[in-house]
Image (cartoon, rainbow, N blue to C red; front, side):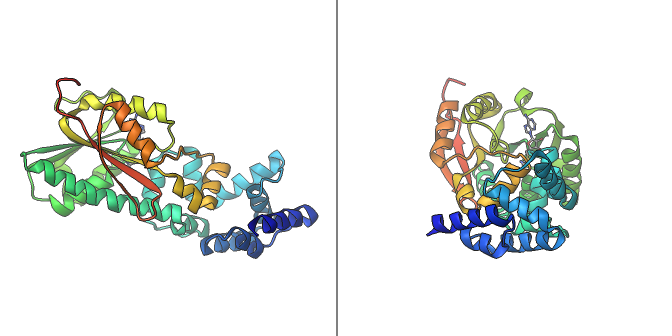
Length: 318
Ligand SMILES: C[S@@+](CC[C@H](N)C(=O)[O-])C[C@H]1O[C@@H](n2cnc3c(N)ncnc32)[C@H](O)[C@@H]1O
């Protein structure tokens, strides 16, 4: 059925280069936010709408048509421009954590399942971080390493919600993006926890902490990296974690591509942000090969992100 409809859709495009949004959305059973996005583009610039659909259908486009699509997105969407400039920037994740967009295209990203899953991810990360901190607090003081933490909204939220008056919970937020760190300091001040979060402008791969971390979190960092690179990265991080310490690592799951292919199409095919989707089993294997003991996995509400939790075993080896 779907194959027939796709064939009909392709035929229609071949015939008159015009494409009905209604037909396209129906054919692929897309969410209503895709319909609203394409209807908005159609009203604004019908040619771009036709090109976007043609591109999704893998119709050949000229270099200038490709450029026109990209130009349209970056001229009409802050989210698209930020992603194109640096796909791994925390500007993009921050944008989805606290959606305030006014442009229709930007609103699409927070309304899409893929965008809402990022919002849900931070909620689940914060819940699980709270559980981990409580576990280690039983031993006394807790030192947390937020690696590639961006502004560290997750840690600031958890500290200000649960440990505002504690003098036993500390964090070092390491990121190579100075502006993310500046934002983070302001967030920590606003949350009343700035005295317990240190912001370090550095690459976490080169960091040699004076004191080992009880907990390390690595959220939104591995998603674009191949499995072998993730293993190397986790091996590099391992010496920073105290024996018996815990690590929490996120990675985007294949379910995102299955359940929200249109958002990934915009991000990847138009904006050039490619992700390496990894099943829970792959993340588990990364932990194992990097020398961490796998404990459990949790996901955002859509199952678009796996968040593995592991420990560094108390052994005589590093
Ligand atoms: C997508 S953001 C995620 C930020 C935050 N962890 C979150 O979940 O919202 C990825 C961050 O990792 C940082 N990053 C990536 N590799 C890094 C490295 N080797 N050292 C320090 N920061 C790094 C980037 O600068 C960016 O701020």
